[in-house]
Image (cartoon, rainbow, N blue to C red; front, side, top):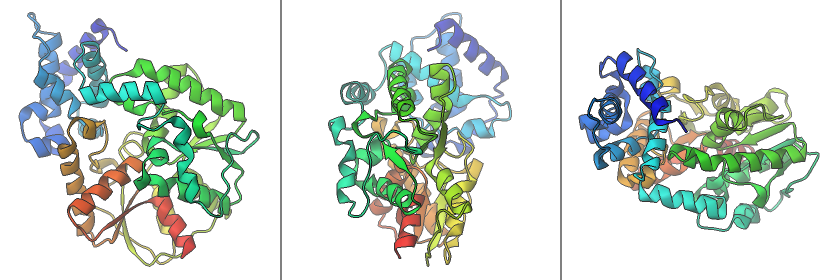
Length: 389
């Protein structure tokens, strides 16, 4: 966590180079829904300046706190910023300050308590992390098996939420089909910590990072894979910084690893007679730079008609499920998701796919709410379906 002086310096530099051009407003999913200037990235910078840099500093108000937490952390404002302002980093640091002031949203406080108590974001005991395995008939999932080649880090959403169980089931089924020697951590897997980082609670993440890395190292695996975009971003971008060095093993998103298996002929894709479009998750795409491998998996499926949405790759729109927004304002999160699923339907696709369990869950709910003729699946679910068919 930055000190007040370090935060003041960051805000001073940001304020100096921000030209208030308004380009960030045109791409901000929250501003496009709310419409008030106070919800735009440039105004949030100005509000932070008033709190930290004026000769007579203003009190941090409830509206200031609300606007900072009404953000998906999608990073699109940074992507389009002509001045190169690292806005996502700034929002995270300002959320840390909000928490220090005791001004974080009560749902985020409750979530932090939940993770501390159960080591996951659900209300279930961590011993229930393998409940999704019960519906697998022909695949035997090994737990904490030393000497495995690969460790699969499932993530909280695919472990505890039935809507996303198909993702973890598909990934292990694909690994099994490719004869990969893999293992999972079971109850020894703790939340990666991303929801806490996104709420400004980085201090609590250190214990989670130390535990998870220690457990994976003890297995002696060469590669860790995860199907969760936020878990992937945390393992690759946050853990090395938190722990002060390399992890000692390779970390890949599941789509990267599966694309590698297809390239080496260890796994073959099946047939899929559907028109499909792809949603780039913010934490996998814009915030981690992974765009090609999910598309390679789609293009490997014979018969599949892949169509792109207008907003894609670096300029992809957010699903609305990032940055803990649903915990702060569920209706706002859902409104952003509705725009995205409507864009998917406009391509003529019958299936919208993504490579993030949170994106899939958020977009599924939006498609159902709007009663759209659109099925929402993870890329790994679609790949496994192509083999089943």
